[in-house]
Length: 362
Image (cartoon, rainbow, N blue to C red; front, side):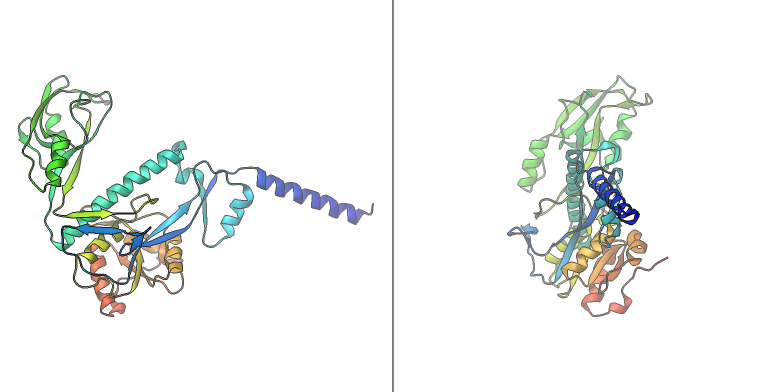
């Protein structure tokens, strides 16, 4: 066999072996890519994304689209060929597997965590929206979780409203721990509560709950051994003067908070927020209306532009990354609070696009 032919044959065999190895050998990476966008003013699977009852609402137009990112599942084994392709693809991002699923977190654990964050983001969106509109509502301190095996197990339950601890009225979440730590481990502490069932019934009837109960719990020592604890985590619950339902399945995480809040504001406001424009965006939101950063901003920009968005509401802390690779035809609008967002939408509605706060590269 001629030397040149043998060399080509050997090279071909080596290449085939490398390709086979690339397909068969898993690598510790995962992939992120642009996901679908959903108009919070529209429908999803045949029903309104935002449904408000018990309060007058107004027609809306335009788009206020929340954006998403697709990720490979926790148990998906990416091979070397797929990783290289992902690195070369402009719209996809290949990251270490532990970035998306740290500490060996399973798909089920990750989904549960995302579902909890999504639920909390909806609650905060309602609070921020009603605050922005000046609509009053009631906030109350509740039992968030009860630690298994703790002194509170079987005595306190998630959703119980905490009215007082040792006779001291509770108005803030932190007040609970402040009162408990005044006791020494082994001493009793008295909780005055509205049981969760009675609280839920009163909320449904739009009435103030009247049934209260006193529960005495013997404190124990914290894991650090430095204070008394009862084994609960307090939380904050809100009672709104009307019903706001957010109907969206198969979405997780907290990053849709801002767009949900703006959708609620739009439906409760006579004038259109967008003026008929196609606006997309992202960002977490807290009860005070502060907009926080999110992951996967580059892919959300691509997904928004592919859906037809002209403007993108961008968390201030994501601005630098977003500005470094903005799709053509998409204008970034910098937001730090829900109030920033509504004011920017007002400028957009009036055609004052030059004064919109923009994102810039460092």
